[in-house]
Amino acid sequence: MKSQRSIFLLLLLLLTACAAPPPSPAPTITPFPTQILPTATSTPPPAVLAGTPVSLPKTVISIENINHLSPLARWGKGNIVQIEISPDGRTTAVATPLGIYLYDSETFAETGFIEVKN
Image 1 (cartoon, rainbow, N blue to C red):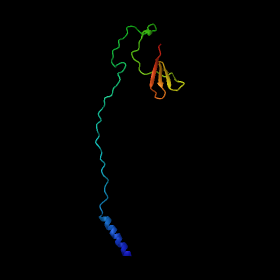
Image 2: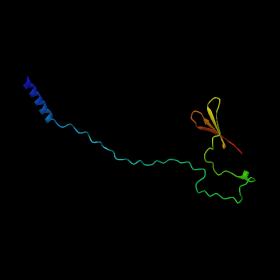
Image 3: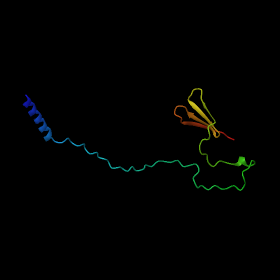
Image 4: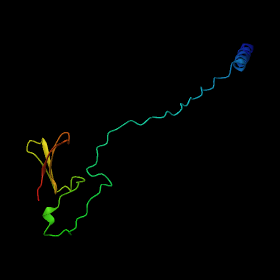
């Protein structure tokens, strides 16, 4: 019985020694980086273009002539002074020094503007 075990172990050792080595892991293929070409996007034109010549007034701004001024451009929507939601909850009103902006309460899309005249 002992000799049968020895023969079996010897046979097992012989089989494992003659077996092919375990396969090495396949090399990882790294793809070459692809160049992504830029796409054309539309940019809205600014209200006042950089470098637009502005004529300088010959008179100094004073309390007497301040009502004759006109704005060249408005950037931003002003600081928020107050926020109110309509009774049905569908419209949100945002008050700023420039006016009252109306928004859809669900989508926050601007639905209207009431300008404040000074």
